[in-house]
Image 1 (cartoon, rainbow, N blue to C red):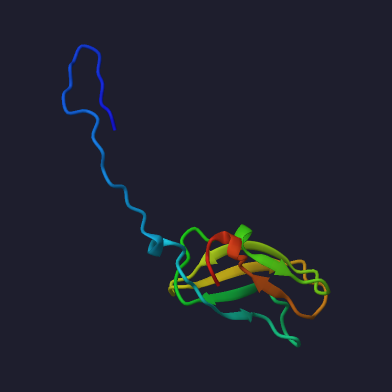
Image 2 (cartoon, rainbow, N blue to C red):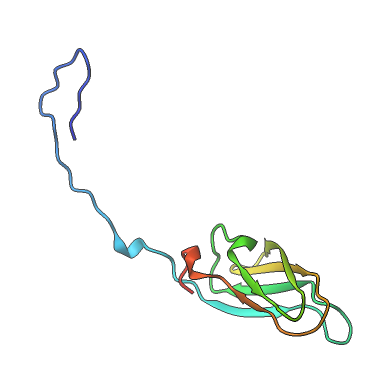
Length: 113
């Protein structure tokens, strides 16, 4: 690196320095361990899905989550954190039939799951 400034004569410039890259500081490994729907087939329509990971995911938003639910009509809403580390609640609405929903956090989010 060279340092110059008008009106100054700087000796000892340029200098070289080693620059480091720590490959171990890559993405944090996270495990998606549980998905639970509230509601019941006989008493209440599902309004939220509880997603559990083994640790918090900084900056995780509903936009990072893929919800696939072809037969139920479910659409995702807001994602909120809970008081428990690694536990998030995803609001769902628009459910018109019972069935199954799949939830994924694509690895493109930078989180190997």
